[in-house]
Amino acid sequence: MSIYLPERLAFAGARVLVIGDIMLDMFRYGSVTRISPEAPVPVMHVSSEHAMLGGAGNVLANLAALECFCGLIAVVGDDKSGLQCQRMLSSIGVDPTLLIVAPSRVTTLKTRLVSGSQQLLRCDEEDASPLGTEIETQIIARFDAAIAKYNAVAISDYAKGMLSDRVLRHVIEHCRRLDIPVVVDPKRRDLTAYAGATAIKPNRSELAAFIGTPCSNLSISRVAAEHAMATTGSSILLTLSEDGMALFRPGMEMQHFHATATEVYDVSGAGDTALAIFSAGIAARLAMDEAAMLANAGAGAVVRKLGTATLSRAELSRAVAAVDEPRIGAVCGIDDAARLVAHWKDEGLRVGFTNGCFDIVHAGHIEILRQARARCDHLVVGLNSDKSVARLKGPNRPIQPETSRAQVLAAIDAVDLVVIFDDDTPLELIKALMPTELIKGADYTEDAVVGAREVKADGGRVHLIELVPGLSTTRAVERIQQGLEIAR
Image (cartoon, rainbow, N blue to C red; front, side):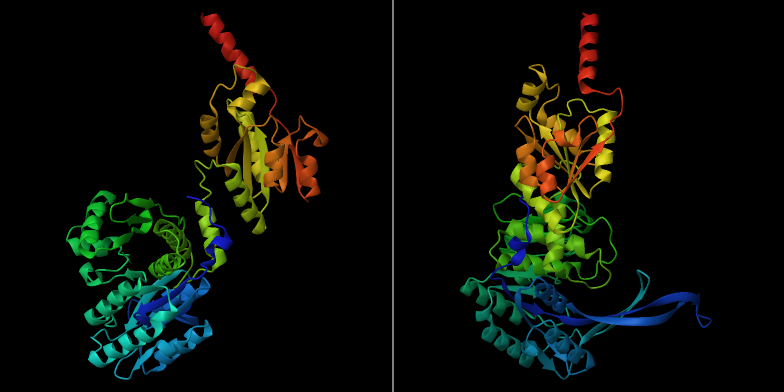
């Protein structure tokens, strides 16, 4: 899949209406230095606290962070937490007047006690009883009055009583008549309650609850998702925790997006982030698989943050760029390489470039790549194509085809990107990428390094690295040929 640049992530025209259960997430931070004398429990000294919108509110906060036009229909109580939710909506530039205040209810409040990066306890205050006909009628009236402003709806069901059968059916059927896509993050065991939605985003346990069989692997999950599609008429975006996401669409092959997180600090709200990004992508008329890829990258980035968190458009752009720069198999064409190098440079990173035939990779190659990587944040290797090597080294070279040589280079930890070029020199490739660091062996002088003048004129630097003596691909090939002749 192609690399997404910040301008592609502008979600131009995305207007998403969120409907669902809002809550207030309160985080109280402190340190634990002793055990209570009253009971065998830790004593936490609270040093600070921080409130964030949770549930459907966090979906909305993520949409606002992505600079989407968004609104929220939800129910709060006539209490301190409900008033704080209204103020927080205003603070992120969202009109709070779509909220419905129900004096008889309490606003859902989740208070987490956190010491360091460890969550010690969560205390919940909530009323998940059905709302009643009068409040349902208000929800439907708010929806009917607001929907003309939006081109996608995100339903965030946390099973707190907001999304009754009546409300769900009205929202989904009305959107179908208007040809407005609806994306659902479900909590009900019976997914047919969301039938007719454009896409439903269950996790593995939610899908398993629907079919009554554990979705222990992707093969079983595929069967379960096909059953869910058949009974709901909806596409299924299945979240798989450490295994990423899988997208199932009627009549199409499954697409599996591997997880991107390497360090997980807190999974709170990762599903909200995924719902927001996926819905924004659908609203911006991206293909569903493109929206899913963005959602997967965003969820992988947000779990690296502590607490219920959001991603800015720039952070999502970086997360997606990271997906497009795998450590293994990082081989791409010149256009994609140029876009990725420009992105790295925009982030203020040093981009190194070196080149060669790398026909038989030996210790000397590894050392020059290692030293080159030490001089930059990302290292791009220009690799002579088979035709280029044959012109430079003779008709019996290369020994290894370009695809094999590229894959070997891409598997080396020091290498971030490999680009194959057909010319005798990498000058045109260097001019297209314009790295900040140009790196060659010390058997060259600086004025003899191809591209040195252009890189220096652009503010870059040239580095000459000492070679490991006695190591040469040409000599290795000659020894191999001599051995074959002796064997004959």
